[in-house]
Amino acid sequence: FVSGYRAEIDPSYKNPTRDLPVKEFSENLPAFKPVQSLELYEFEACPFCRKVREALSMLDLDATVYPCPKDGSLYRPKVEEMGGKSQFPYLVDPNTQFKGYESDDIIRYLFQTYGDGVVPLELSLGPITTASAAVASSLRRGKGSKADPERSAPPAEVLELWSYEASPFCRIVRERLCELELPYKVVTVARGSSKRAQLQELGGKMQVPFLVDANTGKQMYESEEIVNYLDETYGPRAPKSSSEPPVAASGDSAPETVDGPGWDEPEASVAVVEPVAVEVEIVDEPVDEEPQMEDAEDKDAKDKDEKSQSN
Image (cartoon, rainbow, N blue to C red):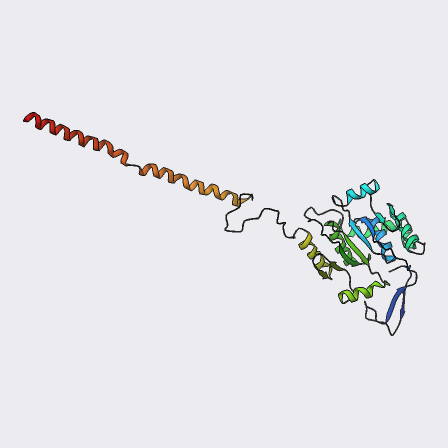
């Protein structure tokens, strides 16, 4: 829910989620929104990062997320360069030049800058808030915590994910985005967000998660389909780069640049050639006939000598 969530019956209103005359809104959300997108460096399985994401949902704030999973090589070094250490979450607000670590400090900053200045109770209980945030990650057994070594290079345009923190289906997608180190803009649409009507207009219904990929023109709902799409486009099932050596098809001769079973085929053909050389030597038999020709000539010479002597 967004901060200050309210619901009331309005016969003239049609709820985009439940198709009921129930209007969901909040009068506490600030009219002031950041002009430039907030930048959040984090990883999905981190409970401290989850607290910040919850604050973004409650304030109905969008942000560009740069995933920094363990063993990640894209954005972790950048955080260390900007802040001096590899610690998460790390928030950058280009609108105010704010840069900072520590989830509680970030949450306080967000509510003071884009809210009414009061941090909600559920986000201000210290260790209790952190422990509750850790429960969700513990049930997922490390999903969204470590980089996938088979990821491809990130696309030119960041992806766009319509989501809200409490949705378990959205979490599945965010986990895979994190593992593939794919940056994305999260458009928060928690209960009470005015952007829910925008999502219905964009995709035809109010349902999350909803992914928009400007690089391929794809738009889709359903967490399972989105994860499959990410793997096939940017993950282990993505097409190989044209710069990689081609793999020979079955029945074709293998290129010299490719290692594997096909590389042994030329050696087999050489082995077949060797007996041919031996056969050539065996066929060269006329050499053995020369002594016989010499013997015939000697006999004719002897016959002539004998005739001349008799005469």
